[in-house]
Image (cartoon, rainbow, N blue to C red; front, side, top):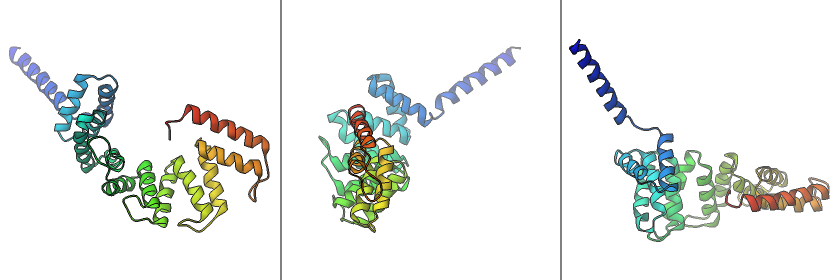
Length: 241
């Protein structure tokens, strides 16, 4: 009986040790990351540090996001984002691109260095990365100006659901910058951006239908509704896009 009890206890302890060493899921790490950032939870931060030292890319990314808010640790954030990105974390590649493109205290702006990280994230269908790289290529910011490539990147971002990219694409088709000029496609993307509640698109569409054009008759009632909607979304969703 004693032998059986000892065996059972040994099994329970072994199972407990295995549970402690099991890797957390990405969702679990992100919850801890949110707790560390929003609640300044020191225990949560220590967990992120421990997981980062185990080379878990999501933990490295979440710790980097936490460090971004601390000027004295932004250089560490940059290193952690790069480690996570090299480990396959797509969001980390995007965040690294953002830090390098914009620059922050302790991290000088380096748009040329940001471009490859945006490209990596865009290759993995990250809409905001495709948008950011598209804008860089369109404007020649740190990379050669290339209207056709910019249009392709913005199309990718738009097809992934990014409303800002949809709006830019509508302007590109209207002007024929890097694509064949196509007013019907321009209108389609403008309508799509408005459908996604993007305030500048709502406003431009309102002005278009108020005057009427070759694609639609003048519609004062719809114009008023669109303008009202644009104002509401600009006020309530100013940080969404």
